[in-house]
Length: 138
Image (cartoon, rainbow, N blue to C red; front, top):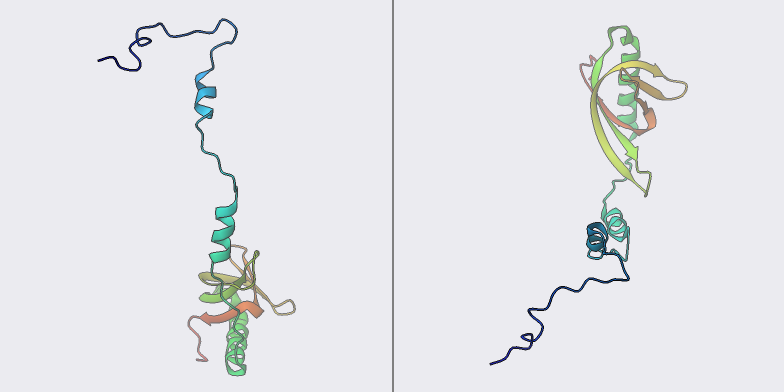
C-alpha cells in the first residue's frame, strides 16, 4: 500500500536561493493573538461596575456631624484620631463609593469645608457621612 506522501517523504528540505530565512521572532509573530476589538472588554467591565449614590443626611444627622466637627476643632492640639466615613465621587460615571478611614486630624478649615488629615489627605465636609470616635456629646 502506497501512502500519499511516500514519493516526497525522503526529499531534502527546500531552502530558497532568493529569500533569506525568516527569523524565529518573525515566525512567532505570525501566530500572535489578534484582538479586533481592543478595549472592548474594558468598556464592558466599566459599564458593569456598580457605583453608589450620595445619600443626603437628614437635619438631625447633619446637626450631630456639625457638633462632632466643632468638638474636634477644640481638641486639634491633641491630634484626635477618628473613623471618617465619606463619599468619593467616581471620575468616569455618576455616583461613587463610600470609604472609611481611620486617621488623625491635622486641621479643620470651616470656611472652605475641608478636613485635612495627618497624611495630607483632604476630605470635603459635604461628603462626610459620619465621624466616629470618643465624643462627649453622643
